[in-house]
Image (cartoon, rainbow, N blue to C red; front, side, top):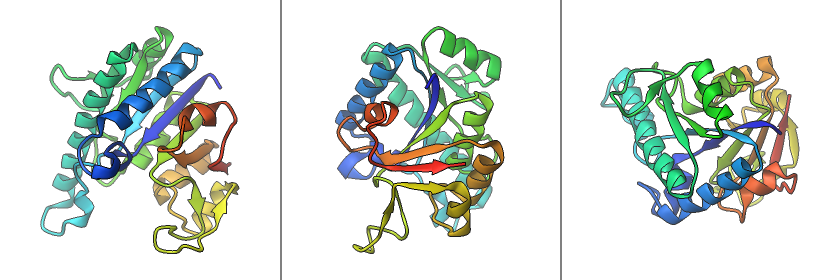
Length: 231
């Protein structure tokens, strides 16, 4: 692998607190990503906003405004995680699809490539810049645009199951499954728009639990215990 797009869920970064940031968890992520960067693997990062805001569960706020709050939550997450990465010895750059003062830089593929070429980690914050699109869709869109080899989908559960393992102790985990099966069975690995984008652009995903020991490094190095989503 030369270039990967790492998707981190906001909830996973919150650790057992389930809200805000859990710094030891983020520091472990930084340590693993630094291992990849030191191995000359180019890393882009998308972070969800669920540790601050899940606007779709509110019926009292206009959907567009709720999604805008969610976009800003992802900007906060990227600023925080970027700084933890910097403290671990990495260079970083945060891109957004909209102007965000001096906090971020407007995204372009050329600027992202320049970022990768100087060995920095590129953070893609702010979603697509439009409502009605999730960070799942952002992840696939950015992975396709930067020509990533694979999406590393780090979640709070350790792979893709045939039903929710939190509510069904007998849920079966897949070692490998096609994106077409994911769509047909509505397994919810990523949302439907993101799944179709993956299928159309032949973008594979490796789905694994963030909290596993050295899970990111092991996934890249082939010591993989999650689910491979093929195209």
